Length: 281
Image (cartoon, rainbow, N blue to C red; front, side):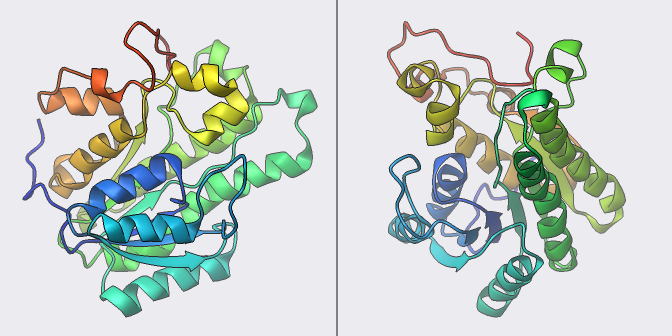
């Protein structure tokens, strides 16, 4: 078990891509309850019937939970937006302690059905966005007392079943993981912890509902709070006690003694949970 700091993110400044909804918002709200500063880079400004929440509604919820929110409207695909969110964080709070790579594009089309436009979107948001946002935060993370990079991406499962399922999406998500593992190795001497985090089961988000099976998919999922609790454990640990790891939410919580996961179920207890993508049973 890794030694925690004071188990609080009070006063810490977190730069996060996305965060208007789902797992990212849950992580932000958990940090907000400690009194963290959360700087969101997201592009959703108008509610969508398929994707609930905007950057402004997320900021409002963060403030209600006790955090300080700084919403920056932009796109993680844009170098100008990345520069703007980093500058805004430093100008407002004087530091960056944590970078959370949460934004992600999803298309599970097989290779022959995947358009070039959708392929480029996933590469730009997922792999390039992770690399460039982290890169922009790194000079400030190097000066932080307990710096963390946390990327929401899967372990590198090279079994043929996953390699052949949807290579376009796989490349973009594994790219996020490889970039993060690379940061962990490159900046170990600088004391920066860089890890990935992925859910054991599918998570009841709008993305899962829209793309993986609607209400039925949500019913076989856990709530985003399990990822938020696991992320909180990682981000409050001593930075170099854990780095370069591909973590699973349930495993992280078990390390800290948690054994009851029923409260995270999105549906009644007799509903079988669905294992998430890239994980073998």
